Structures are given as C-alpha cells and as structure tokens.
Image (cartoon, rainbow, N blue to C red; front, side):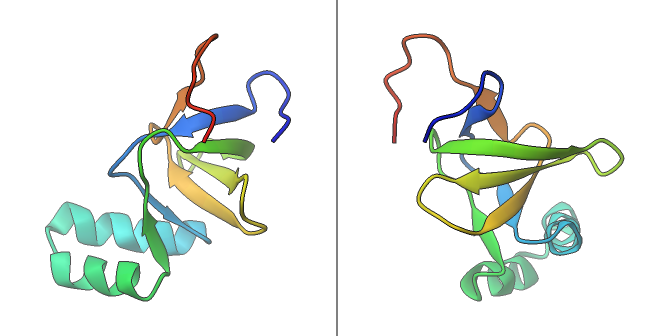
Length: 98
C-alpha cells in the first residue's frame, strides 16, 4: 500500500472497529458498561472487529466531533471507523509491513 506521509498507520491491539460510526459508538457503549455479551454478539456477527497489533492501515478521514478515524486495511475494499487512539504512527525503519 503506497501512502502519502501521515496517511499510513499501524493499529493498536484491543481497540474496536466498525463500518459505521453509529455501530462503533454502540460497541463502545457496551464495552464501557461492561456488557460483554452484547459486545461479543457484535464481534461474532462481524459488525465490529477487534483490532490486532501492528496491522498497516490507511487513514482516509478524521471526524473531530466524534473523535474517530475512517481507515482502510490494505487487504480489504471496505472501510472501517476506529476511535482516536487506535492507531500509531509508523516509525522510520519500522519493519512491521504486514
């Protein structure tokens, strides 16, 4: 995946991702409330993903008011929304080209 500077990032394990900001907010609510059953339902139905560490993604759009970022995985055509903090910058010389 070729990206402009400040477009490519690596994911942080344990953060949630979803195809819409509304679904991500719903999942965040379940996580915050400790409702593991409802959160697991969303994950098992593939409405929400649990991010793995150091997966390369492209940042497409920032939503300041929602504190979310729209991303695209290099091996996927779809886009996902993640919470601010779910991504980290790729450092020069980083070997994590997954």
